[in-house]
Length: 354
Image (cartoon, rainbow, N blue to C red):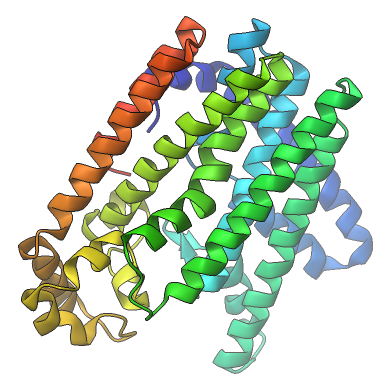
């Protein structure tokens, strides 16, 4: 959940974003028809992957743009939609990396095509390969689509170039963070490594880049754009740390994700980095990262995280990052509505349940 003012903007402009995305996918599905039914289904799965969700990134783009331009425009809606395409691409690729077949409680792109392979009589391993290959291609197509949307914005060449630079940089940095996340698996990374990974993998494209892109399109100064990048980093870290807590302690019916998956994967979050040095974790850790982890084993791991003090330490860090974001918002002297919205957004990072 994001701040109340941003939510009102999503209510008002979210329809326009949805309409743009509907048209984007309709055009791609029409083009895909010339390449066979399977390719049409691939684009259909990509479209469905973009449906739902909290639409945080479009909301940030639209709010930042309107704060400096005075109102939303067709081009700001297009830019906001590009970030939703980018977000969907990263989710699709992230599921492949994590070998997840479910997203938001339903088969994701990889899962849908793996099931299709099973239906066609493929062995399970080959069906999973087919599903993951399909998802990789879908994510690639969405990244290319997002870049094309930005490149075709009706804006002065210098503004369009600045926006492309923002998008290119956030993809570049997010890939570095994702690569570090994979490298950390089983490597016992420390606090600094994990926080750097979060800033790169999540904060850049989820908060900093949307805020900066909306501000650039709205005509904000270079100094203000830089300050929004700092605010976005703090918000992004707080948001991801909350995600990591929910990944272990959240309710699946609320989050749309099993509270077993991070523990089965052996995901090296800050919770685990803090817990690792405690004897309670050592006694429970043998099942961490086991594909066969059951709820009883997960309960022991959760209890060890609690008793080690790791959960409290992460909660304190979330509070600290939210406070840093609020302080940076106050110092940035943003337009009143945007400043208030981002302040509420920072505070809800502490409280959200999904």
